[in-house]
Image 1 (cartoon, rainbow, N blue to C red):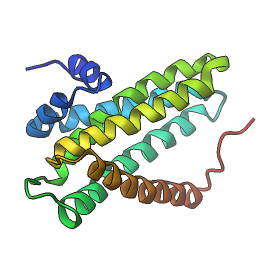
Image 2 (cartoon, helix red, strand yellow; image 1 turned 60 degrees about the vertical axis):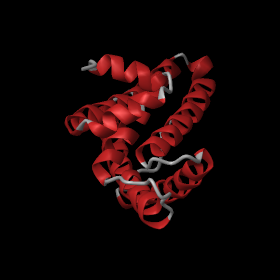
Image 3 (cartoon, helix red, strand yellow; image 1 turned 45 degrees about the vertical axis):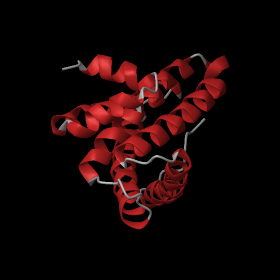
Length: 179
């Protein structure tokens, strides 16, 4: 059995086998949740969230990340396993929660955004890395042979998830970072 740290490193390295491993390990859902929270905290650190409202803003970011993770996993399940499956596709929401959760591991690198001169580059690279890791995670979880099918499923899921998170932000009155 691999440790959580080893799994995170393997996910950051984009090893397809890690997604097969966590897909099959029903006990890894808690670990996936931890990776999502850690990635969210890293984003908060990288954005330099500070001041008296920092704890609330960081907590809001974590909550939004957790909601987004669940929404994306459920959407990906419906889009990828129900609407556009391949003949080999056998999956459930739990498998997608675990694989997509571990796909957030590259987001931990966003903590390096604390170096303000690098912040935009760090976030751009981390976000691209997150997208690539999610495509790999979805391809493995849905047993796709086609990476392009996984890209399409992720694109649909991402668009709906971003819309959902934006609506949550509006609902709770979050207007973005303050100067």
